[in-house]
Length: 165
Image (tube, rainbow, N blue to C red; front, side, top):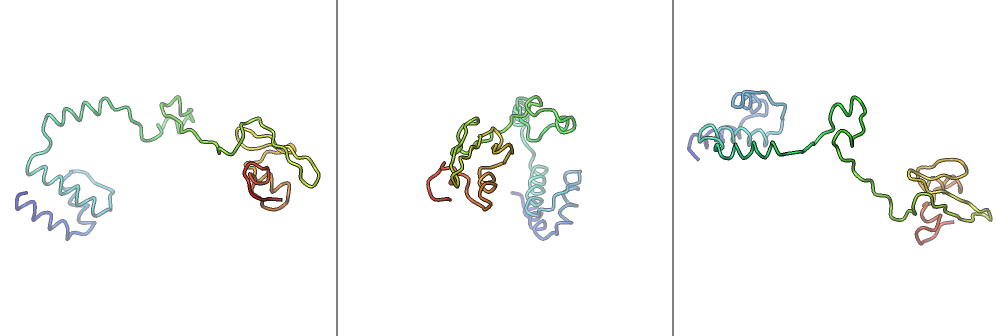
């Protein structure tokens, strides 16, 4: 590394964040909203070195362009999908599969339990549970509606072993 770049790096280390942002604007010819000193120092140092010793070779730049053209990468939801509420699948974004709790039986299953000599039936739905004509988000909510106090729904309906009233 030439001596002048080493001196520049030493100067960068002593600069405030405001001064680093001004230096960034000077060497990159654009403003930045970054306020992370370490990042600013690294980016400015890279740019100073690239300007002094030459940047990437033409071969590397061509290869980077080829890779960028082949890239089919989306890191954010398209604005059209947000504005028009287009289903994400049609906007080219894959939805993440939500894993169901492995302790839960398949949707459509009816859980039966006797509580205080009364038979109770709860139907497992894709999204929640149905009991006595009402929908509940969890088995615990169903157990609380039945008993009037908090009780683990998996324990209450015997889907896991331990004790519950």
